[in-house]
Amino acid sequence: MLLLFKLGGYLTKNEENTTTTTNSSSPQQRNKLHWPLPILLLSVLLCSATSFTKFATTATGATVINIPVQPHIYNASAVEVITQSLTKTQLVYNFNNNNLEAKPTFFENNFIPEHWSVLSQTVKYDAQEIKIKNGTNTAVITVSYEISGSKIGSSTQFKLERLKHAMIGNDQTKLHWLFTLD
View 1 (cartoon, rainbow, N blue to C red):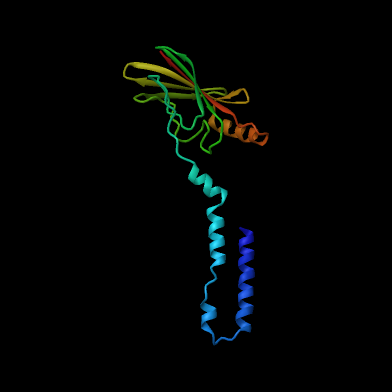
View 2 (view 1 turned 30 degrees about the vertical axis):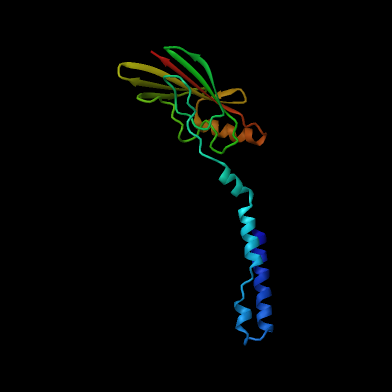
């Protein structure tokens, strides 16, 4: 970007010098448009890496698996079903961070299954406990974030740990989701 400003300044100075030395009686030369420069700039902008990645990325939907009670988690690279029964479901969502939104703390992720309402929420160091209700049924959802083998309950603390681990190149994160029917 800095080079473009430098080039623009150089061309402006060059044009001022040529207009002062040439005769002002030739309006055709002053109004003549120089096509190579705008074409070059447009082609550089169109072929930039950000343009390619902008057109290449598509919005991915929530990861859906065939389980009756599940959260809406977006941009997960894989889902592992650890436990599945009538009273207990345990899922682990893996994220590889190839996409900027591929993280457990993505703002559209919803840990609460459809048709359930939140009764209370408790955040501990290694997990969040969310008590939910659907009609007469109550359940507890336990959510934890994992990076480098350590589990974290707070999303704010997890974001800080993610920044620390990004410095050393560790970008593999997981989201643990446990649904237990009371």
